[in-house]
Length: 330
Ligand code: ADP
Ligand code: TRP
Image 1 (cartoon, rainbow, N blue to C red):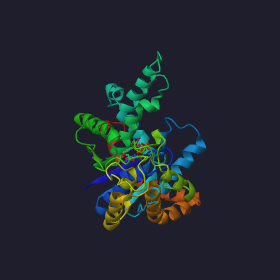
Image 2 (image 1 turned 90 degrees about the vertical axis):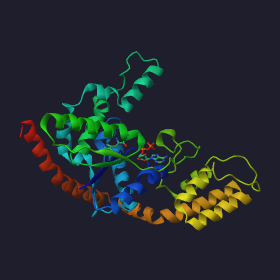
Image 3 (image 1 turned 120 degrees about the horizontal axis):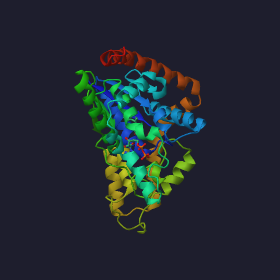
């Protein structure tokens, strides 16, 4: 049987790119199959860089509430906080003993940090690298292998990590016989959603439109989307328009055709942005109500996560027990 598992790092506000690239396709996948599905908030992964307690706990709740508000069904998908499942960390150590150091040297987040250090002229290329960052892919492998996950939906940048999990599992199995299930990355196929400045929408570029923010701020951000300086009456190209790209993700086919015609006959950018704003407001109204409700009852939210962790542990415990027996410590 298939097991679909993915993890979300609680870093900053969930935005439209995350919604279209991860949340919507992720929920569709989870709800449309009979497979077991698990989703967790990777709070310990975040600890590699986030060292403020209140920020970490707030960001963790924010991400959990966002997925729940967007329709995650807790009857179909087990949702939990990584830090609530100690079995993962025990497995992480075991796996680290099967992970060639060279794998970690090649991990892209570590390499990126090293090249920033080089560009900054630092003599120590490992400056600012803690062991959490270096070992990040081992912990991610444990997240995946702890649940016999077969399918791991991730953004393209994370596919390498899933391949590491597969390679590490293979090394383990080569030594002890078939024990760990080999996972594969599942890419959403969703094209990258542009941000306010036309580049990929990303927290790192500070060009995002957050899903859950005040109406006024939300409208202001939509009005900031970069456009050309054509006058209102000039025909507009739908191909190079962030406004159109976003609109078509949320509107019906006939609404899309209508806006396309309007673009072709000439539309002012202010008006086009207003049309997009209203569409998004309408689409996200129920999500926002649910989000606000969850965030204003943090105890309830924590209970949902704890109950998910209990279910996850029930799955993890027998698997870990078997792994320990196989390696000779159980
Ligand atoms: P960010 O780039 O803002 O830090 P993350 O790396 O946390 O976003 O991405 C979380 C998930 O959202 C990943 O599955 C990623 O592929 C998806 N995602 C992020 N930005 C976009 C985007 N602009 N378009 C489509 N998917 C995106
Ligand atoms: N590293 C992933 C990211 O940055 C988050 C993550 C942690 C994850 N553990 C995972 C994703 C396990 C999939 C499976 O987005």
